[in-house]
Amino acid sequence: MLKKQYLMIPGPTSVPERIVRAMSREMINHRGSEFVNILNEVSLGVKKCMKTDNDLYIIPSSGTGGMEAAVVNILSPGDPVLVINIGAFGSRFVKILKAYGADVDELKFERGVRAVPEDLDKKLGEKNYIAVFLQHNETSTGVLNDVKKLSEIIHAHGSLVVVDAVSGLLTADLRTDEWGLDVVVAASQKAFMLPPGLSFVSFSYKAWECYEKAKMPKFYWDFKFMKKFAEKGQNPFTPPVSLYYGLLESLKMIQEEGLENVFERHRKLKDMTRTGLKNMNLKLLACDEAASNAVTAVFPPDGMDADMLRKNIKEKFGVMLAGGQEELKGKIFRIGHLGYCCEADVVVTLNSIKECLR
Image 1 (spheres, rainbow, N blue to C red):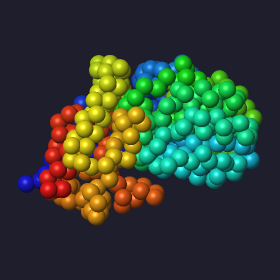
Image 2 (image 1 turned 120 degrees about the horizontal axis):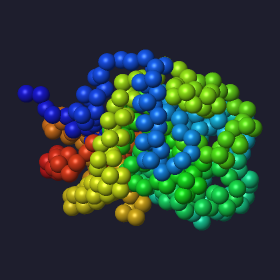
Image 3 (image 1 turned 90 degrees about the vertical axis):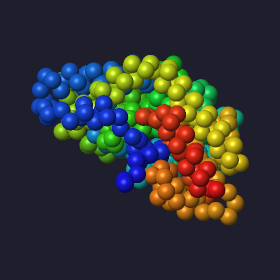
Image 4 (image 1 turned 90 degrees about the horizontal axis):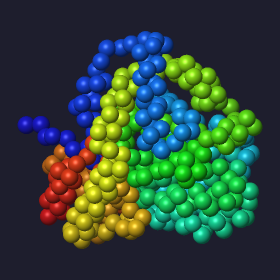
């Protein structure tokens, strides 16, 4: 008998049957009036999730595509920028920025630790940076940054605030306008409960001022081009229409649950996961104060290979967990508890780990 699959990784996450059905609708003209209505509705819905009135662009791409779009629309080659690096996705921003010729400095923290505001303040006092790039939630380490506090410090030094919220949006509160976040990137395959394929980028008035000076090459990622088409209710290029059907249904589900309730559900799943792991005497990478609501990073018992443990859990119980990244590869395993996830999923996951350890 085939085992039921429990997709307990930080993304892509499980997709509700309700969204799967919505995505099976027949294809429509992506330049027609029906798609105009869909695009306008989902754009407004994602803005509510980001808590912003800024411009929003929905791009057919992974979250990394949204990160790259954020870079090329505000910078020129040689521009001095700072990346707050608390994990693999901070490192990804570094790689993107260097690929486009930015002058990149890193403020790197120990894995499992969130960014220290005092360290950031000191670093920003050393040099004038056009923009500072940071993670809302670092998936590779299970750490949640204090974006509000970090943004206050960055603005005090006159830099643009660019936030990767790909795995954080909807799992924890993010107030784009209130906290002065100039560019925020998110994606479909995390807490939005959709398949991969859409990224979302909000863009402030201050970011548009930087756009006018930006000289980095861009075509597919050009926000001015996207803005021209968005005013007509269209994408510049052919969009994955089925994913927009799914996004429409996802936003309805979020509205029905209530945005604040979505945050609270993720917080409870985090607490449940961490408590269960501690009861097994397993060491967690992040402390309680900095712990992510989306993913928990765990050390296996001494002498046990993390990837072998994951393999056994998958084969015996059909529960899929994520491995470590970068310097943590083979040293930790990660449990995703975001998106279409409930207490029963966490119970099955914790029991599976317990049985395999036994």
